[in-house]
Length: 545
Image (cartoon, rainbow, N blue to C red):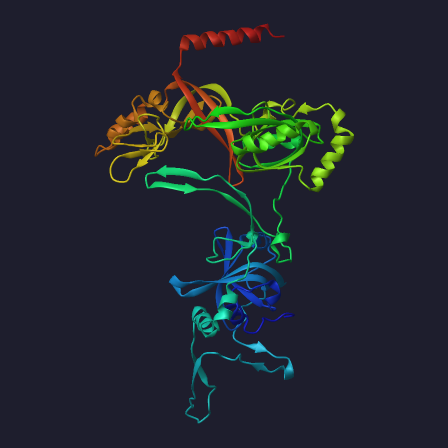
């Protein structure tokens, strides 16, 4: 084998569980054994020929394993790692965040012997354990090879003893390694980060069944792999600008965007009453344009509308450049942008993008005719693959799963879902109050069929017209000992024709797009009206060439 395991590699890892920098990490080559998936990551036993330690790869390395680059029994060089102690299990866990493949998998696991090149002699590794040697003789008087019985110590015991024997300053230094934000993962119990707070949201209050509290959001930015330890080198705000003409795919998605543009117009401040709590909030619309010769309306809310918005209004005649971070993309007027509590607005920022945009506008952009980005979008583009398409179908209910959760507890005032309150009653988040009673409302899936095929649809309280009773009444039937009345009620609801008004929308879950069909209204089939409709369609077919 061209490469050998690093002697005492596991002991080296345990003696320095959190290295201060990558330069402090010596060459550590270990063998992968018992490689197996653990959720989105892969776990294994790291073997140095003498000791083993439980280990797990960072999820970013999973592609290396699935591609076959990293294999079971293969050798890897550890470039960055963290060793976490699990007190409840009295053991350590090695988390590998960066490594490289040294050698493909050999045919067997490398075990308790290390080869030295001098004279080709094979030596047993030095054992740092208590060893008992028994010398036995055969009846013939020949001495047999000594039998070693090791009282082995766990990895956690070794590192605990090493850590206990260190000076206090050394123990403190071991815990001061600064982690980059990108390396943080759920398996790290303790970590230190060095960041700049680039955005702080407004303090918000909430109230639920457990009581009241306050919360606010912050955005953190680190030095992004820069070598300097000075805080001045951490960028204040990072932007990832999206050109205005490429905003269509982001409509009604959960992904926020950053934009940069030249101010075209600024509206006065207006007051909007919020539906959720009747609170009046200030709003101001600005229109910006960029090199794509497209414009878009950005709605500034709250303090951004009154403070930054007023500054933009004062500078509007000079057409300042504005960069905005974390915007929600909506479909109002085709495409529109709206600020959130975490949004950041910078006027005439000193960035290459701002300077380039200013040069373009001063030379050509002023005289260029601009068009709204939403004016040229087709309905399919505007939808962002998530807007609902609504139509009618005539079909039969072919199957209703009896073992599904068919209803939810709802507030009698607003029909929103309620939770059990502390003590007695139910808590409604929408009404912000407790109530002693609640009602049941349908939420179920049923299979519908017609001559062309079948499909599953979601039905809410419109299911009363399908099943023929309320959710409270069906719950009473289900609670009966035999439950036969409940099963019979569901069976009676099948194979009856209905006219459904449905909506179809696509949503994304785990990077997989799924189609969701929801029933908006249900009505019995009017056979006379349906017959007239079919006769009209037949007449049109006859008249067509």
